[in-house]
Image 1 (cartoon, one colour):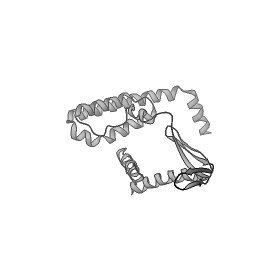
Image 2 (cartoon, helix red, strand yellow; image 1 turned 180 degrees about the vertical axis):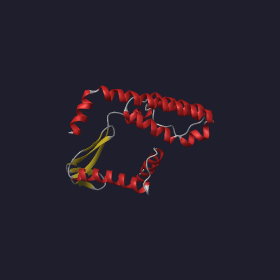
Image 3 (cartoon, one colour; image 1 turned 120 degrees about the vertical axis):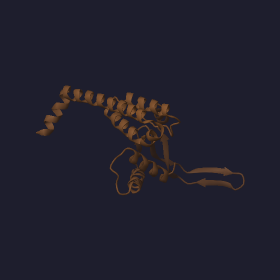
Image 4 (cartoon, helix red, strand yellow; image 1 turned 135 degrees about the vertical axis):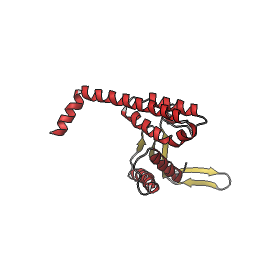
Length: 191
């Protein structure tokens, strides 16, 4: 994937999530990607190591001057230089993506496959991040739902997601009301 494809994917994801659309999402995504890589290069220029958790690490490697003998030309000297080295994370992010219930398949072949995936997403809501990701997944499947599902199936899927979201919201509220650390934090903020 190159930079422009990454920018387009960020735009598509932003649109699918149903967020308020800026005037030009391509420019927003372009700015985000350019800024990220610019900041990585600035940090490397300053001699820092850049680590993105579960992705990898960039660092500068200094090589010594090397002398080699090439049969055709004789001895050749390679000067010392500084190179950027990227090391992939030890954890396998692709494996995590494969096992992530919120990752939408490229396309759904039939209604049963879509309903099965939506049920898996609904059953996977166990924390706030999953709650947001489930809502995003629901919004991202709007066109697939309208093409593949009958009206009754759409209503059943909507009821399933709404029920699971409501269950999680209820559990979350109970946790907030029973957690003394949370209330101490709120009282501290309100003073």
